[in-house]
Amino acid sequence: MPTGKPKPCKRENPVYFCSAYPITVLNKTIAFLLVVSTITAVSPGCRNRETGQQPQQPVTLAFNLQTDSTCNYIIDNQLTLLPEVQGQTLHITQQLKLAVALHILGKNRFGKNTEITYNRIVIGSDNGAERKTYDSDDTTTSEPLVTQIRKLVHNPYILLIRPNGVVMTNEDADSNTLFTDSSIRKMVAQCLYIYPDAAVKPGDTWSKVYSTSVGFLGIIVNTRYTLSGITGGVAHIDVDGKVTPLDSTQNMAFKGVQSGNIDVDISTGTIITSKISQQLSGTITTDGKANPVNATAELTISKEN
Image (cartoon, rainbow, N blue to C red; front, side):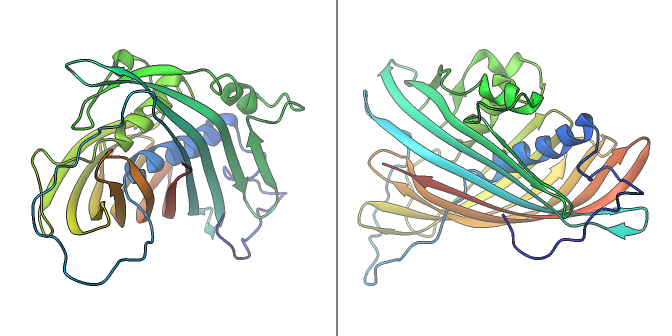
């Protein structure tokens, strides 16, 4: 989580981000984490680039993981929130960490039947007065949130993933209730929505636009991708984008920008490593009052095998 000395909440005058805040407000913050993970999970990390002449021939980038192949990922989103409440700026850090496995069961004319398994879900929260961790591996607690996320781990489901990264699933019609399979499946599905519609060469750009919602928060994401280079069978993609609210009157409304880069294995289309930064601003409405919030987010995706 981000470092620094946060300003603690006043115990005698609790506000909605204190450790005693209602579960509905906690859910709003977690929903924000989920959506931030959704819109940043496609942008990757630091890498060392080789020098020399870059190949200029077009390459095809597509989801092409072969049958019986498995990829394990760690998705780690660290968020800093600076809400203004009762004339006071608070410093809140939040973390959402997922261990996710993708296993290809087979293919048909539409795409790859892919088994998705969450092996671990960890949520962290630090408001300066108290630090809390909700871990699906923790069998000693009866915390409601831990109970919710524990039900999702080691409980695989199947998605049909097309070569262009579009996920075909009936989960789109499910509710947006926080931490149902549906809400996290949306996040996983959007991680794959990165591929161009045609072969590309260094310098080419393409765009993706989509809307998504989890719980209390709905956003529209407009992302531009640029193939900046190719080295050793790895495509290096720069990413920049804008985030706008689906509905500016909703309880949580955020806008901002994101930038980052992504490394993709050309032969399989899988993300190798990923990192993105976001700068967001907006409001969270609680008890009829809109409180301004600035936020920064750092998300990394690392492939474990």
